[in-house]
Amino acid sequence: MFGKNKKTAGLTYIAQGSKITGESHFDDETLVGGAIYGKVTAENKLIIEANGLIDGELNCQELKVSGLFRGKLHCEKLTICGTGTVEGEVASKSMEIFEGGQFIGIRVKDEVNLLKELGDDNPPMTELKLQAQE
Image (cartoon, rainbow, N blue to C red; front, side, top):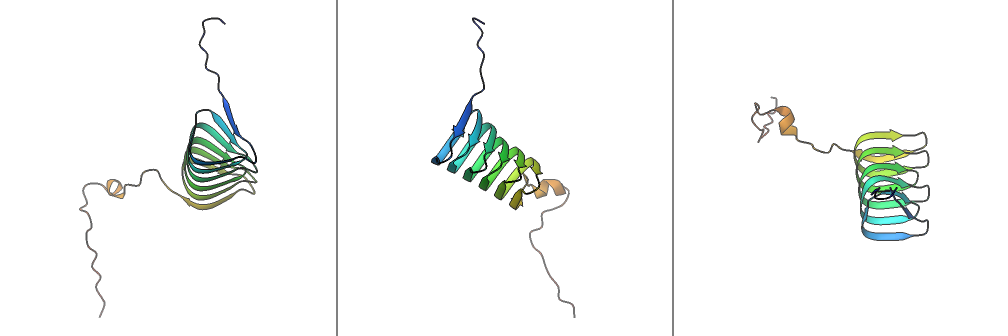
């Protein structure tokens, strides 16, 4: 007990009726019942409750949505619950959508490098010529 330096996991709660605008950073698990507008970074799991809203850019480890997320999202794991809606651009390694949940937008890869996928053997295409048939 004495002399041990034990780090306890904390919890951040943005209560319903609260509104945060700007750039936010959360170290521990975060519950959002209110509204956040702007750029958000979360080191751990972030949960948007049924009445919660995040509108902007979000970078987190894991996101669970029961409310509304709108904007650009980058995460390892995304879970959209039955009452949840995600609108926008999503870069996620894992995505799960439960019955009733909505995903409106586009899912993108983190790194899209078409030239590397084609290989260095092929010269880059700089011009495309179309010929009309006679």
